[in-house]
Image (cartoon, rainbow, N blue to C red):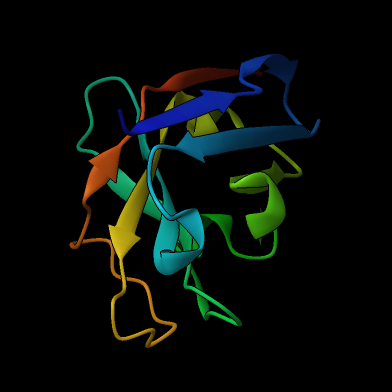
Length: 126
C-alpha cells in the first residue's frame, strides 16, 4: 500500500526552528514530485513548498520564502522541510504529498497531487 508518513511536528516558540520529514513507501518515490501543504485553523489549505524529480525546481509560497527550505533524499524515499524563524502564523497541520511526473519535467504543481500523507501538527507559540 502507498504511504507517506510525516514526522517532526511539535510545539516551539516563535523564532525557533523545526525540521519536518516525510517518508514514502509503496511507490517509486524518485519518479514523483514531493510537496508540502498546510492548513491553519479556520483557513484554506495552501501549498507551502514543492520539489520536482531529479534536479527538480523548487517552489515556495511567498510567506515562507527565505525561511523554509525543501529538500529530498531519494535513497531514503524522503522529503524534508527545514523551517527556520518560525512565526505564530506558521501554526498549522502540515501534510506531505506526492505527484507523478512521468515525463520527468522536473517541475512541481500544487494542483496536481496523486498521494496524500497524514498531517503532522506544528504549533508556534508567541
